[in-house]
Image: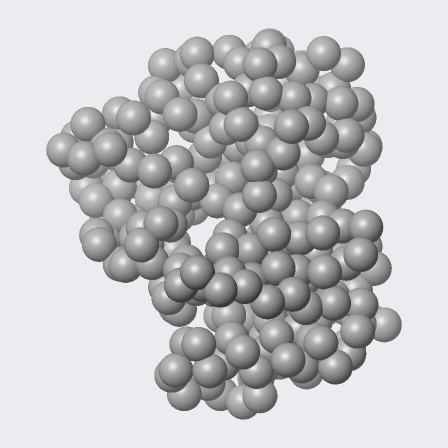
Amino acid sequence: MNIRALYRYPVKGLSAESLPGVDLQEAQGFPMDRAYAVTDGSLDFDEHRPVPAPKTQFLMLAKYEKLARLGTSFLEASKELEVSVDGTSQRYDLANGADRERLATFLQSFLGVPLPGTPRVVSATGHQFTDVSVHSVALMRSISLINLDTVADLGKHLGKTLNPLRFRANLYFDGTPAWSEMEWVGRHLTIGEVMLKVVRRTKRCAATSVDPVTGSRDMNLPLSLREYADHGDLGVYAEVVRGGQIKPGDAIQLGDA
């Protein structure tokens, strides 16, 4: 098995960023992954005492598929987010309160639908807005993995090529039979000096029904997945047991529990 691609999603619900390599740390998640989020106005988030909240209280693809039309790039050194749409772009300083308000206002206007309240860009030191954050801190800091052979097999069944980015994972790999990763919970993966422990299968939601390029909801993928595989899972979560650097091309070894 080999890593084929690494991605982070600096702002929950917005576009992926391809990475040439990542330094993982023990018991920590993907660096700068889901470090920011935009509430839908229904959540009173306290950055000094962050409490995980359901993804339904944030702007996210499962509910607001139009977000996929936005291209974003996070400039880590300056904490700026560049947002592009229809050939134009704008930068927002996420360390600046006024710029956060401008970004939230832009997203509300861009979506053009009623929201429960006034959206806010939120973040907190050490907090990641992952979907599984509501279960535990350890799961909040886990990383998501997708077997490209599984994606290809599902696509073959559906009669179309599935863009793997529908599944918004951190690590994409291949070289093992489709669906075999569903049996890995409790087992370890070694990538060079890095060791991961697979802790949970990934239940897929309506976000996977959205084409990540066009922003259209072009299928009911969770339903198709259940009809084909007799369950709603695709991909796994893993915790970092031992840190180190990983990059595309690195070999992955499957070990025992």
